[in-house]
Length: 244
Length: 263
Image (cartoon, rainbow over the protein chains, first blue to last red):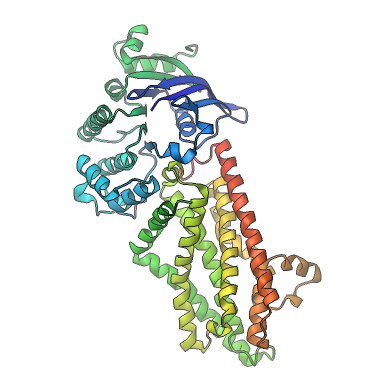
């Protein structure tokens, strides 16, 4: 599934949160969205998920305008995971997966829950309350929820934030394998530059609602004469005049 | 309407109730306390008031019906607030569920929560105070239906406020029913109100419901016109509540408040 954004803009009264941005995620590609806090990443994801109405511009799914498509049909092909959005804590992992499986209209749900819990090593705490899990376990449950419907486009907001290196590596490896096996498109917002370098085919850098640069990780590093993506990020974030 | 999704969302609330004994206790505790309190007050009134001397339990019946309304509305609000408190709001609103399916799930689940609290309370009143709400007979079903529709309408209006203004609107959720209680003529006849307030009171279904309840219990007369009016007014407000909810949802998408709810 291809996702394209054309001249997308979001204004909140006098404040422009997202300012005329354009990008495209081809099928099977991962696009990294980088930028300092408050640069418009969350607002952009919110618009793509249908939570925020754009002020202007278009979101195209396989060349068709999101606004003209059936909202439920499209959302059934999307999913989202973020450590800042949680699942009901009093419910067990299995109950949460069952509920979201039903909301996403997953067929043969019991099999899908078994499959995904096996892949993400959730089997031993499937019947445990979600609120009683460690952050690493919660993170994997959140990822399981985001994959329960076999999404064609996956939105990940800092998927490995607050995870120890071992679990962080497990999650990254799993996303890599899942993507190559299922040919899904991913939009990844992250502050972990090593993660972005490892997972993303293309990167856009945002600042004050605008895209200030884009390219592959290596092309950006070379273009700005830095040794790694983190230094490139710092250069772009701190340079007041840097605009695409 | 996809009923599998409605069932899925309802399951979320059933699992929540099932998993927590204190939660079940809380649902039963408050209505039962109300019964005890109003049971003793009504016992005192029946001994001291000529208005009620032939009709034991009018006040207690009113208390039970009012609590039914209160619990319906609060149940609706609580289920919505649970999504905010658990920071699950975004997950819910990005899932492929229609607004009408969310409303249907909350409406159907609210009745279960309400009945968990109200059935034991209504049954307690029989041996303790010799008052049975079931004496109202078949019209009880229509009165409860009307109260329920109006209760979830208030719930819808409060949840619309939560979507529009965020969790800070929570206090209004708790206070919402008390705004209307004085106009509802729950424990007193409408004639007590000043004339200008009577006009306002009559555009609410509560007056018609509680006047009819007293009519049945005191005069043993059933006015189907009054019952029909109560249901019709409740349905009118329900439709209005649904419209307000849709408008709030559309407004929240423009203001971007949906993404920050719970944070």
